[in-house]
Image 1 (tube, one colour):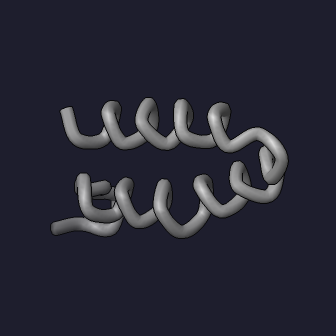
Image 2 (cartoon, rainbow, N blue to C red):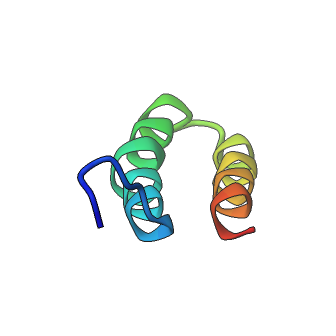
Length: 47
């Protein structure tokens, strides 16, 4: 694997440890919106 390769595992980690925590803070008062984006983001990665 070269340094410019991005695997699904790396993308999942970015979503789970960078993007979702930020969205959780942004939508702390709107769980439905957070849940929607969590599903959307995981859907894109896991397709």
